[in-house]
Amino acid sequence: MEVLLIEQTEFTPMVIFEPNRKVYEITGRSYLENPQDFFHAVLTYIEKVFPAISHPIVLKVTVEYFNSASSRYLLAVFRLLNDFLLSGQKISIEWHYVDDETLSDGEMYEGLLKVPFNYVLNESAGE
Image (cartoon, rainbow, N blue to C red; front, top):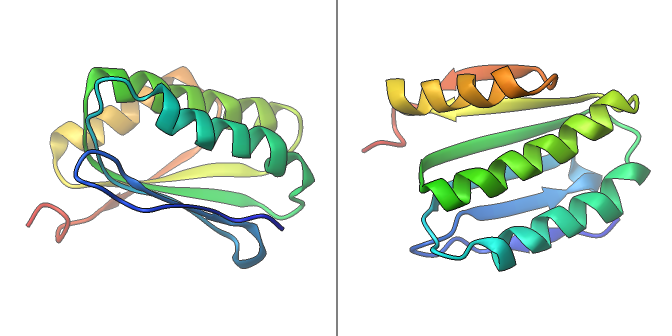
């Protein structure tokens, strides 16, 4: 199955979606002024590939910082996952947080969706 790999940069997170290994991760910082191109690739991949996945999907998200523009696109990713959940796929989000603020961000997203969130304190990410 097709793999999506986007290398982390100073302004963008790393994205690894490898269905054959059951790996789905978004990791790093996102503070692009115009994040639509970056997230368009992610959204297009999810729309194209996720319908053919039969195993449970756990998206691991470790985002240390994201600006408001990136936040809107991250929500668009989560809403797309929410649509797949509502259509019967098993999907959850593993939200790795580094402090109370990033925990609160995850809880805010969870409140807008039906996708279950599991929270993991990532003490080493803030160092």
